[in-house]
Image 1 (tube, rainbow, N blue to C red):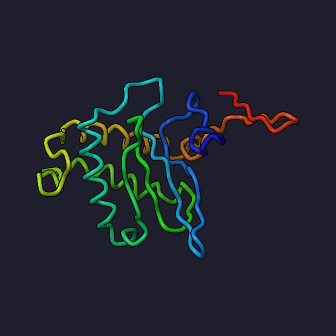
Image 2 (spheres, rainbow, N blue to C red):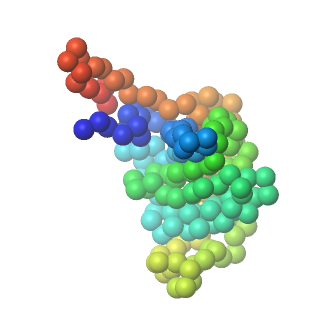
Length: 174
């Protein structure tokens, strides 16, 4: 079975950043999945699950209300490995074009007084939120983005080398 595209990224070398994960064509349209990586996989602790849940609610609300971007947002949600989020947008933009939007989104968490939609009628696990920890993670990532704005490494996936034998077998270096 063919490995999916996100498994061909070298997770031993990925750093926090904003990466284009994949572009899917849907007839005349395209959607792009972005990897918004907050933590180094397998090298630093993952994001606390309750804080991750709160970040999902707060930033999804921010993105879907941003006047310049709301019509492009298809999805914002956590990675199963708890090291970051996926953002799916209509169209295709370079990762660098999302920098200011995401910096504003993560900075906005500091001003949150409550987690939007954290009520039984709105959320499937409304008790699993941690606003204070969400603020801490968001602040950490915003500071990292600001410090690394000129570092191209935060916008380029480290790809695993795919070796293919003469008979079509695939091997990976990671």
